[in-house]
Image (cartoon, rainbow, N blue to C red; front, side, top):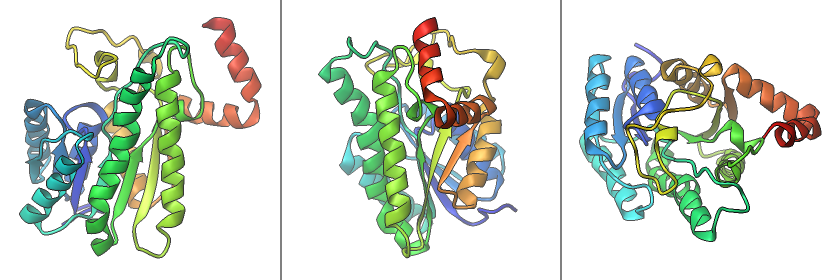
Length: 262
């Protein structure tokens, strides 16, 4: 068995993409895995994959913008399995609009899911994690280091998640609970099939570059390892690491290139 044998893990946004891959990876490492999201049929598919990987799975539908539902989800998991050891705040989506075209309502919707949904997940899970000396993980993005054309709202939301994660890492010292901020680059997911209002469209084509995109299961292995080691921060994908380094060394060049070729 792996690092998480006998542990209980909860992943929001667990119905597809990165969230599903993380759920399956936790199952491979011996954890019992609960997944939450809005699409029940997708959660059931994840549970089936968790079980195929040798784990126990539990679908707990909820919307991360509904705090009562998040608290209820944690209560359901604890009732079923007796506690909670890991919470991964993964649910999110991206608004694709130029910054000066994105409205206040666009930003409210973007931050509502990607930021307040993360905060709500943490607040719902933390009382149980404090009992177990557990682990928190927040899903950021390489976009938290550098914005991009039509990505101002999304980048702002992920920058907030990164800063929140760093603050939790400091503030949780002495509690036994760790917080890991995960910052992936391009990873297989359904994010580009979700429109600016958070509605999924199965027929949408993902236009992100396949050449540098990681498979979700590969990214999940790296992410779960970082959670296991209680890392403060982990950047995932080779191009993600490159962007991180370039933004530290020569951010002006990065933004010049963005403006030049957008």
